[in-house]
Image (cartoon, rainbow, N blue to C red; front, side):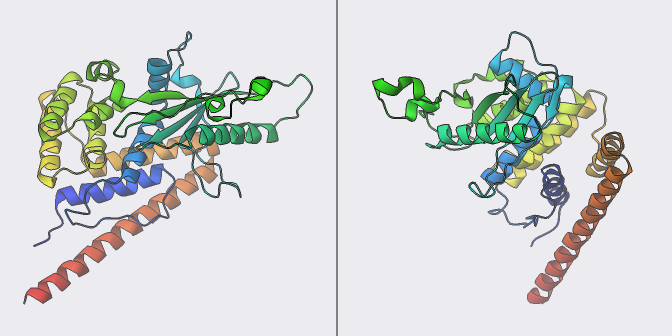
Length: 336
């Protein structure tokens, strides 16, 4: 018998919420209640990584913890640039996340990889050129104009060793006559396999917690890692955000284990004297924040857009529940 449980409801809500954040509101949300289809795909994992790093505080922590600049990046000095470059050449090829320093022409490009890609040096080169091209469209290029610096960051969460050259010049032919003509652009690699759990834990970041769970090799290790994460941080905010990680990052585990993790989170928050907000409360808070932000950045036009998005969200939820009720009714008729 298939039932639409509270867990299934949370899964539907989170699918739509993450898609909304990614600007994929027109995509059809998959809410099949089938244990085999319930496993998170690489795309869902990728969406979660993007969602985490679209938080400016998380992005600033990642830059400071892994790139270790002499002058630490303040999240207030980060501005989201864009997350895709659509050209005839690349069609709809998507570069994950791009941030810019507000007070300098420095761009941070984030590319997440769950598997090795031998074309990564070329891809990073193309993305970097695209950023500069977009930048130059808005500039009146003069003789003394200085072009921006692009800082590419590749996050690798796959299995196996990452043995792909980081600098584009290393994949070009060797010719001593024209060494100075090789293209020197190198990406920064964050290989999760080479980072210890203790280092990720000490970062006190949602990204670090997600990667700790990603590193677990089996059910026992996953349970141990989860216990480690929820006991290391009493922040109500992080504990609630871990819901997304449980649902989307932990692919290949049973529904029972996921529900157990969600229950542990609930008990942890209540133990710390808090109350775990339900999904509707979280969505209500997000809606208020979206309206406030839209009013500040885009005025009334932005608020109208937020209202339209929320209306579409409600319609999708109603359609989802309607489809489920029809399916349940058909299943009941077949059994009779």
